[in-house]
Structures are given as C-alpha cells and as structure tokens.
Figure 1 (cartoon, rainbow, N blue to C red):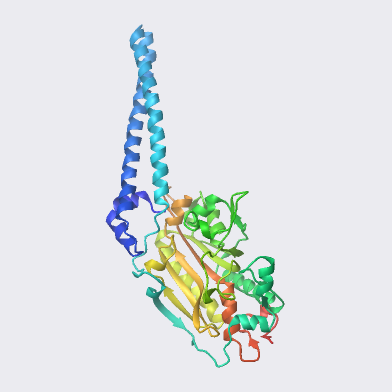
Figure 2 (figure 1 turned 90 degrees about the horizontal axis):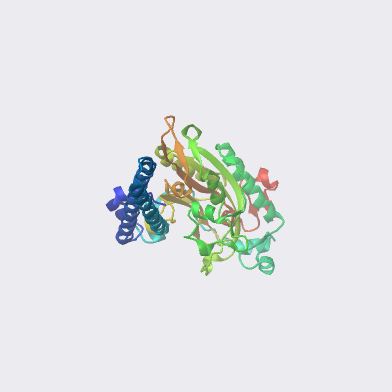
Length: 422
C-alpha cells in the first residue's frame, strides 16, 4: 500500500507514475488527499477537545474547594458536552480512516523509473537472451511425451479433482521431486535459509502481500474457517515478518521455501492452458528477501542472476524481460520475467517472475527497520520463483527429446538417479 505521506508530498509524481500502468489516477489520489485532510482536521479538533476537557477537569476540584459550586457544576456540564462531542468526532474519524484505508487498498504500486510504458505483454522489454531457441524436426509437445512415456496422467487428475490437477507418475514423479530438491539446494548455496510454511493463510496474510482484495476471485477460499490456499509461498513466507520491527544488522533476510501452489485461474482457456502450461495446483520453490531500501535493487539483480544460473545449469534457452507498466503485478514496483523456449510448442514460456515491491507490502504488513539510533523506516520486500516446475518440466521434456528418448541435463541426474526417459 502506498504511504500517505508519500502521496501527500508527491501527488503529481504519483499520478504520473501510475500513468505507466495506464491508470488515470488524478481523481482517486485527490480523494485520498481530501479524506486524509478530513481525518487530520477531525483529529486536530478531537485533540483540542481532549486537552480542554483535561484542563477543565483539573479546575473543577479547585472550584468546589473555593465554594464556587455553581461554576464547578457548569464546568462539569461542559466536560459532559465535550465528551459527547468527542464520541461523535471519534466515530467520524474512524469512518474517514476506514474509507481512506479501503481507497488506498485499491491503488497499485507506483512503477520504478526504469519500467517501460506499455499496455500488454507485447510492450515488455527484452533485456537479454541466452542459448539457442530452435525447433528440431522431431520436436513434440510435452503433453504427447508425457502420455508416451507415462509420466503424467492429465485425465486421471480430471477424474480425481478436475482439469488442472495432473497426476505425476513413475519417472514423472521422480523428476518433479528431483527438481524441487535441486532448486532448494541451489537456494541454500546462494545463502537462502529454507522455510516450510503453512499452505493456508488467513485474510490478514493475504492482505499483507497484496493478494487480497486484488486477487480475491483467483484464490481458493476455505469459507468455513475463512482461510485461503496459498497461490505462492511468497504469501506465508513474507508474512512471517508482519508486525515486526527488524534491526538493520539483521538485513538482508533471505528465505526460500517449497510449497504446492493453488490458483483458480478463472477465465483461462485455449491452447496456452493445455498440458502443464497453466494448472490449478503446481509446485514451486520461492525465494524471498527483506532488505534496506538502499540495497533492494542490487539484491533484485542478484536474484535474477540466481534464476538465470538455474536455467543455465538446466541447459534451457531463456530470455529476461522487464515488464511494462500495463503487464506488471498489482504490488510490484519492478518485475523481471524469465521465459524458457519450448521446442515442442515453438514459443516462450514464463517460468519465473522476480519482483521488488519496495515499501508497498511492508506498509500493509507494518514491517519496519530500526537503525542503531532507534530511527524506524519501512523495509523493502522482494520475491522470485526459483523455480516454478510445470513449464520447466514441459521445456525439459520438449527440448531434450531426440526423437527416441529424453536425455536429461547433467545437473539434474544426481537427483533423478537416471539420465534418460525412454
């Protein structure tokens, strides 16, 4: 959530930044400032009344001691009037604050200066590419390969749960588990401390990282207990630090975690959702950092480099994109997407998003940093997929199929305990 002080002091800059998201924010930002002024005016009046009531209360006893009963009773009546007025003012202030908070929750993060303007994925900026993106004559989509080698049963998943819930079998299951362990080991080697978080979160956690209310309809909701299945490990891991004040010496904090992820993906259809391309349940290893503001963009680049290192070890051609304002997530200030080339489908598949949220999540979560002098400021939060498995598996199968068998990259075979699928 954007900080009120920042909006007040930088109104024009905030409006201009949100224009990169194709949002005409002048009206809503003006509403925010007007509501804040109303709240501050009420608070000022309330503070004055409380101060006056305290002063009168101190005089009442003195008036009674001096025998000035009528004046003392008049003062008591005045304090009663002030109390009634204060109750009304307090109710108005709470209503204004609630309206202000609700309005702020609808405003996305302001993009970083380096974010390109644009309306859709077509306007994203290619930062760099690695490897050769080519299609062999025998290139085959992964949904045919998984059926041929009995790695994944999509129809069985439909029977058990519905579309988007595949069943991994045999070497398909072993490959899945091997990749998870490989990604966790690589994260540990990079200094990330592993966490196993809950797979359900409460409403406060969903709000803290920005999934609620923005993505309410995309999350699976266990209504009896008002809990939400996590769409990513970012939510529970980042919320470890909700309502926490960290000493600056503790930073950066680096966590990683493997979890299944659950997304309704309402409205998704067509060829881009076939097979492993878009699932309701999938596995992912996430990396999360809590940082001092002055260091967060250096750490963002390091996180992107970590993900690139994974893709190089898996020998997958990839490209790094800087997302334009119109394609960025609600809470992000800057996002890099990493896409691998799918030989069997002849297109690029997103396998990771790495984002800096600056203070946006921290403000929602009340996550602050304290320096050695006791001064406090909001932390910066970052997260990235390192990596999401479905499309990685799809690309590994498609890019390593030689027409007869699938030859796995050397980096993963110590984990799978087999080199080929045939």
